[in-house]
Structures are given as C-alpha cells and as structure tokens.
Image 1 (cartoon, rainbow, N blue to C red):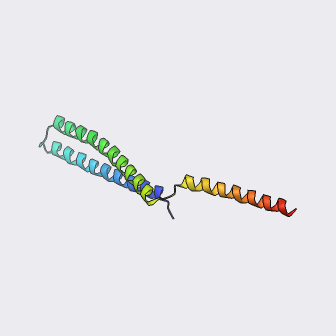
Image 2 (image 1 turned 120 degrees about the vertical axis):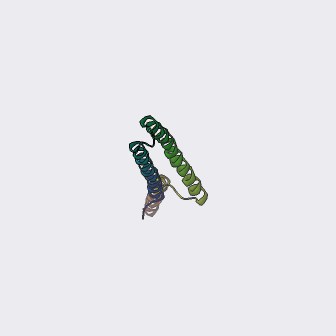
Image 3 (image 1 turned 30 degrees about the horizontal axis):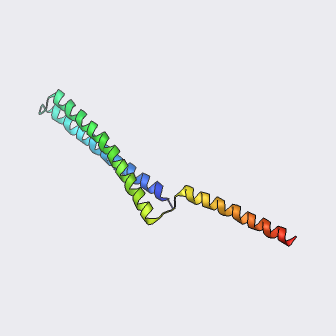
Length: 108
C-alpha cells in the first residue's frame, strides 16, 4: 500500500501537470491568433510572457497550499510519519533486547 506522502506527491504532480498542459494549450491558442493576424506578434509575446509568469506563481501557490492542507489533515487525523514509526520501531527493538538480556541474566 502506498504511503500518504507518495499519494500527496502524485496529487501535487498531477495538479502541476494539469496547469502545465493548460499553459501549453493557451500558448498554442495565442500563437494561432498571431498566425491569423488577430494579434500582433508583440502582443502575442507579451500575453504569453505575462501568462507564464502568472502560471509559475500559481504552480508554486498550488504546491504550497496542497502541502499545507496535507500537513493539517495528517496532524488532525494523527497519522504517524514514516520516520517517527521507524524511530519507534528501533526503540521498541532496543527495549525488547534489553528486557530479554535482563531476563537471561536473572535466570543465570
């Protein structure tokens, strides 16, 4: 089963991919308008440039918002992070070994 972090990454990458795909379609549409002489070349370049500047900001905002949302949800639902689980597993193994050693010494 995939862990939550992996699922969140897929979700974020899908969103960013969707934004990128939309941006490419937008660029193609503007280029078509320039070809059809409905926009000048300089107007087309400016529109595309402005759009991509905004798109980059939107991608970063989307990723950051999603990351914050996931963090809030995982904290609220009290999910254990992988590294926390690994630390606890290691600590449990150490304690089990210590108890086994103590029992062994008492039996001697």
